Image 1 (spheres, one colour):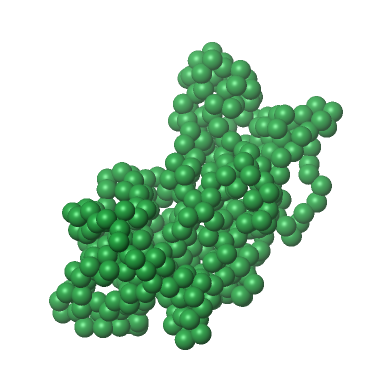
Image 2 (cartoon, helix red, strand yellow):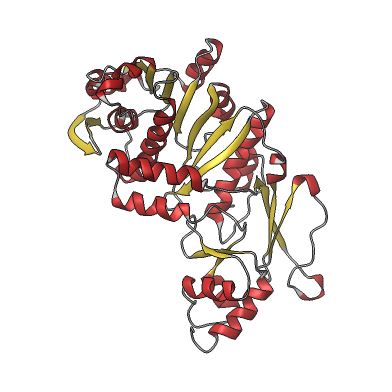
Length: 399
């Protein structure tokens, strides 16, 4: 029997914990999961059934917060909850009594709860066989979740949403290349924007499995918890969007001059010359990975609007982070480190990001702050232009 600790509070949830794994500082991901659930609940309410699954629930905190904070129904529409289900699953049977105890407050709301202690693969297979499809699945596991991606997609309803978390930080950031080949079927090399590369590889893994089933994807949000975990939120569509396959490809970076380039798989050819003299380039190639947008501004605007309408209790730091995501959809594709560019000039200290963005826009380039990698900015300017601007604008100070 695991030791139980009482009186942990988060949002509207008050629950017990045990000695099993629980990370309080992953609250950003749980805050965002609640906002996703609330946004979807508003779309489904009163029109059709809605079914959510916390696949690896731990103590059950996500599901509890979904029911208390996201499934908000006026009294006159309370009957709409009759078609609403929250499934809570954790394969550790020892935690089942803890989860059941923590879910008691949801029973008072007349929410249909389905409590399970199955292996994830077993639950998903049964759901698929029984044609029990989920509108929202949160999969937060240890290590890589890729072996579960296709079973999850099969159990997702059309236009269902998958929130996927990976704590495999070494493989997709180029620190365990063999493991990346095994889990991602991809070449992973070290890169200044390694967090973003890891996220794009994870989205690509979802896209490949979705495409095998004739489904399309739409990334709604992508972020990292300090490089410790990589989290993506993806809508699974009934079919592929036009030219969706062109979003799969490779990103190359010259380790000598720092130049970056990309190619979609459908137009794969020789790599063009970089900024090196005499063609002495040394390319580190990452991929296949997702070349398209990382966020949906429209979706994120809806979540923040709903948060204000319903007073959903998320942290101020979570609100500010989501506001930053809204300003960075992941394009232009290339992310640049101000520190690296300053070293190449060289400068004694890197220019602030706002000076970079202002100077690039003045030159007619797209430029914005990256919300995915701290200290990075996005632009469609090539490395040669970046170094020229850096020398011309910043060599005598920031102006």
